[in-house]
Image (cartoon, rainbow, N blue to C red; front, side, top):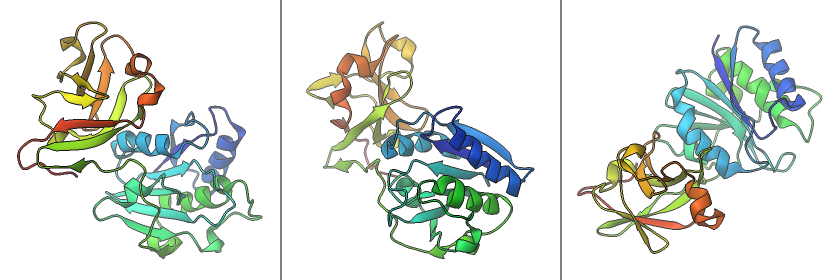
Length: 261
């Protein structure tokens, strides 16, 4: 039996997490459940998408990601499942999975087959009554099209794609990690790492490791997920620059023949 990975904004120790795990284990007693995070800020779908960017594909092939950050629960927003890069993703069609759906070769279905849902169906807890039962079925061996109907118009992703001119990528600061490093959507394989990036009229130098920077120095380096991130040696870039920096534009010279993945 496969791995089911949970990402929610319910909070650690939440009864809601326990209820979803109960549904999963009742349907697939031999599954392995991994908690990625339950400390997403309430209803923060962009934070969730950013977390998935850095963690989702670190898990074993065949993993089913159950993602429940769902401010639109009970509305007409769709429930969807996605197969991408050998993994499944189940959650609301509110943008939280939009960047996954945009990956090359990704397939998306609308979860509209009520026979897979838990009854009675709550209007406020689709994580337990729709997403968890479907995730269990996928972990148990069903194919994507067994649990829903193919769609081609999922909600767009929230992380954005950098724009470009002849020499420069223009990206965005997406948000902090737990250390206060500021993650961006600038792809490292396209950036000229010999030249500084520009953020709020500041030129920030590149380093390869934190140890290359002076204590308290603001630097940019390549994050473990392959994107540029802003950091402070022995400190927090978020604290140094302030929360208003999230969403700010960031520019960096591109390498010759650069492209955006």
